[in-house]
Length: 285
Image (cartoon, rainbow, N blue to C red; front, side):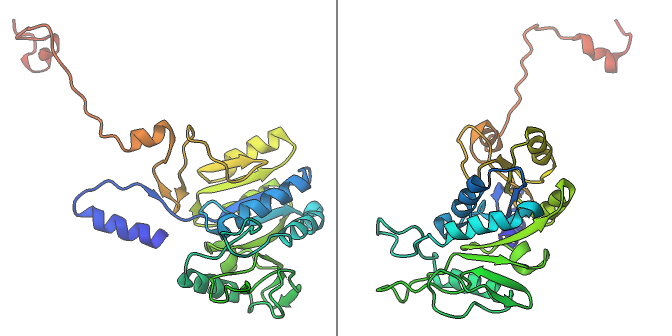
């Protein structure tokens, strides 16, 4: 998305056209040990897998404080295993296919950098396969849906034990793929969360109000949720920092962004010489 934004800016440059861009994202989902872990796990599943992960604000990078890492991961995996992949027109389906063959190929390509897709039947249960560059705690390959064998389906995928600068951590995947990494303290969480070129959205999960305020200020993202992820209201602005673009959608900010302001000043005195004309006439009568 950033490359596309650069291309649009180059095309607009010759005509000095203004551009307004909401580009890619790689949202951090920061969970502190004092958070409600059950609420965070539910938020992570919905935030990461809704719309098959095809959302610029999707919760794709989960950072969990070490003391809560295992308890959170257990909850997260248990809920993610319940996600039902299938026909998007069916009422019981939770997650449908990706939008195209090209997008499916992109997801597979990025997941393959972890060390190869997980083996075994695509039953959504994962096999905990370890690779040299990470662990598929869940998923890792295409999902097979009866009667829709040619569909662009991919399993809900959770990757652990991966390097913080791995491709799946720093690059937007735009699919149902998340990574879970540990952190030590607030400073570490801020450093890891901000260590990507994107800055669209992120969330903080904690029961400490002061920590929530500190983290919200320190995270370099246009939208920061506290104890939630994804909902946006029309009266609040939405837009990114860094390579996630500029300009805001929704709210008064967006109206101003799409408005060309004109200043009209009208003299009503009728005076031929005005008080400020001394700047050129000096002390002449």
